[in-house]
Image 1 (cartoon, rainbow, N blue to C red):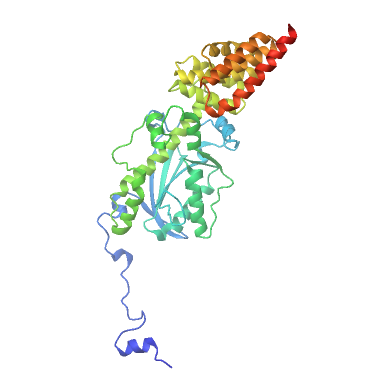
Image 2: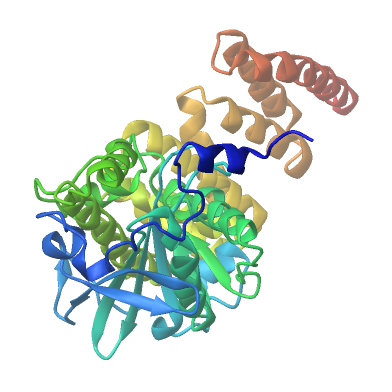
Length: 415
């Protein structure tokens, strides 16, 4: 039988096993970097059954303004709840909301991406508290997730920005890696990115949180902020050298994201709750709100909002859309006199929708077939001249030609 490797090593004078190795120095005796995390970002070690992680806490008083938006504004969420189709939001008190934003080691997601920082915000004791859970190394992930689970258990509603597509799926994946479940199915979840796209897609080129913070809330960040694309690199560099100084900007970035979400929700809650009593920053915002109410089936309110927008110096393209939508709402609510007035004005500009609606009105409601024929012919001419997109033109021309022939037949029968 061959001689065991351990015997050969002992024969050469090599000590086998860990019995004679010197004990590692205690944690408090190990050398600490001059710029360790607790020396750069004030906080404390959070200890739970799964280990420990680092915790940073800040609070914002009840008179704090983020830009021109009060952080502690009323939060009437009835309209938002209806838009989101989740009535749990309508009755959720502000103190039971949890704002969440994470910083990760990658922007694409996947099993190899760690949420090394979880920012949380909530209202309590007359303050808005921002709590940041931080992994000083990947071994602290279990403790971080455990601390997050405690906060989630205490809330009824989760508020994120792109959290439905990124933050929550990534966190669920990390809980799964630890054979645990992220319990959020029973929580209402409002994703502010979807709401922002609904409200400001017509006037803002970007609906990113930083753009909304600047253009909607009037807030600007200091030079301490770092761009999001740099954050993974900053964290990996910290893991290599334990120098936490660049992380200071990451903590600032994450905290301000949480604060911006809370201020933005207060702003949106007010403008959607009382659209006619709130002075909008831009007339196009009325148009966006009108569409929102129209989609929810609140047609009378939508009509009043469209009317307000048309009296408030809308840009030409937006004015034409508001007139088109208002005429459709009038028609759906049997206010044909008001619809007719808008269609006649739009027809003077050769707008196809108005010409088609006038053709239908004269054919079916007044049976003025001569006017119906004229409007149909004008619609064919407008579509043929390129006043409709190609796909719509291919659909409309056969329909209009059929209508023209039908109206002509009806006119001949009445002669």
